[in-house]
Image (cartoon, rainbow, N blue to C red; front, side, top):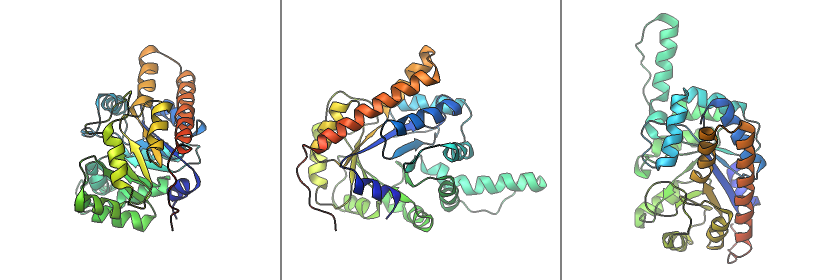
Amino acid sequence: MSRIDEVFEDTEAAFVPYLAVGDPDVESSVAYIEALARGGADVIELGLPFSEPIAEGPTIQHAVVRSLDAGMTPEKFFEVVERLDVDVPLVCMTYYNLVYQYGRREAQRASERASGDAASSEEPGPEPFVRRAAEAGIDGFVIPDLPVEESGPLRAACDEHGCDLVFIAAPTTRGDRLTAAVEETSGYLYVQARLGVTSARDDVSDQTTESLDRLAEYDIPKAVGFGISSGEIAREVVAAGADGVIVGSALVDIVAEGHESGESTTEVAERLEAKARELKEGALAGATQRAPRPERP
């Protein structure tokens, strides 16, 4: 059983926040992630910025730009993970091009440092990235642009290094494709609350409850993301049948507001911790209103 499995086994409703690592700078980012853990996070999704974040709305796109402008790279991302003083599982959310090309790029840099020769025979593939991530302390991955049909090499690398691989089920994911996503998923299934890209919303989409009803037959924890912005919405989503909530844009908004207004790192961290506590309490309140579920074998 992985550390993520243990979280969903032990809590009535998991709170899974997301932040882009390095937004707006490394030192602030470390403080903000640790604040989420103090506020009650059960698992933390850490965004490794990529220049083409196709699943992200404007809020997280701007966070990605701030992080990249501050110099974030895959290796700096791993160094941040190694520094974090948190005792919860960490999930890397990024895009497959970074994962796939990491090994060859690192081998090429090593070759250049050793001999000045830029040539490298290292083939691209996900294993070097997963190995380095696991060494740093990453427990799992969410790769939004990776089709389940092409996930075999990454699934194998995750199995080799003891990491979970989380797939996203959109409201339109059905039939054999949904079954394949569930079968390849470990840790939790990321249930997309509505069509479109990430953003904070003030209501619960009908698509959320329809998706949870459709997924009820599958014996895997279901965490809902895309649009959860308050404790009240977290309560509604969990009461509708979710095992957890994933919150990104509402937290990134706090980082962005603090950055733009000149708030201190301590002030922004305190706001993040308070928001995390509100969301966790909302999720737990929803669990008391959720229909009883059969025990997992």
